[in-house]
Image (cartoon, rainbow, N blue to C red; front, top):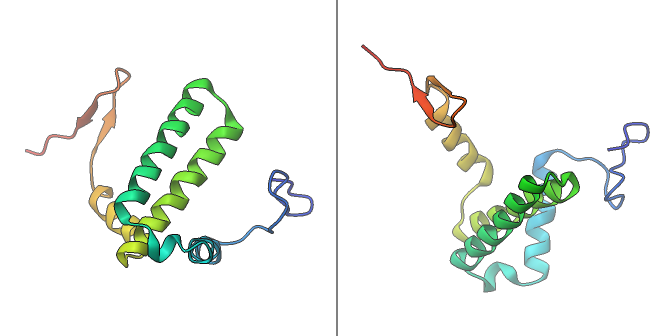
Length: 119
C-alpha cells in the first residue's frame, strides 16, 4: 500500500476501507453476477478449496503478490459461503476465536502443537 496517498498500488480502483464496507462490496459483486442466489454453499466451498490450493502454492514459492491475491480470493469465497447460508462472516470468525482464545501451549520447532497439560 502506498501510505503517502492511502491508495493500494496494486488495486487503485478503491480506497482503503474497513472490513464491513468491503464485505458488502463483495456481497454486491456476488449478487450482481447472480452467484447469490444461484450458486450453492457446496460449490463456493469447493471454489474456496481451489483458491486455498493456489494460496498454498504461492506460500511454498514465496510469491508475495500471489499470496495476497490468494488470501483475498479465499476470503471472497468464504464470504460467499456465508451469504448463501445466511451466516455472518464476522460472527463465524468470532466463534472460531472463542474456541481458540483460551488454548494454551506452543508450536514446537518440529511443527507439533504441544498442548499445556492441566493438572
